[in-house]
Image (cartoon, rainbow, N blue to C red; front, top):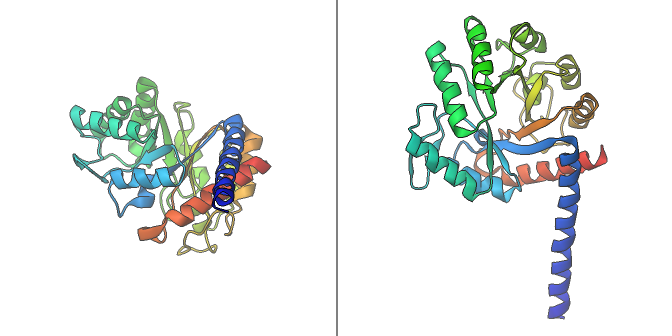
Length: 279
């Protein structure tokens, strides 16, 4: 009987692994990467957050400025981190087999701070800076994108934020570096009363990354729910992204049940992989 139970457990583990591999194959074919914004775990250190990403089966992270690093590494994640600390953080990420793909949301106070932001991103191997730049800095940011060959993804905080509507993002990037585009925060669009599928359609060809969210209602004070169970029409968003040939990063940014969001993030990850497989 004991052998039978062990055998069934082993079979279940193999079946689960095979299913995950099939789902990962489906997302790889589309050029999609699923990770998390470390802000999801902002009640914890980065060291603790990476362990939580591990437990959710995620291999990509977007870090946010100001998170305490933790472990045996002093300091916080910020653009002025010295080289020794940078190397320690990169070693920490490597130990978890997690790739740092983006950093934000940032809004530098002047052009010198923007330059430092890009230098930091280059040193850390970050491909996308998620930001909400001031209008007077857009030309400087455009030049820095070209200089460092790093993408800048303009993020949409909810209305009345400067970039709450896709039209303002399109206006900001018009005539500037092709490396400037959008970070599509699906949940914030819903909070602003917008249809996320229509927003994705408007930004066709300009979306660099996503902050993925599903909400319980279409309202400014709506909260996150497990993906696929809310009102954000995530499947419709994913269908449109596939139609556009989008290739890039989906970052889970789960801003609810802060102290214990891992079970809901895990379920969201499973639902995302299921939806990807069905596309």
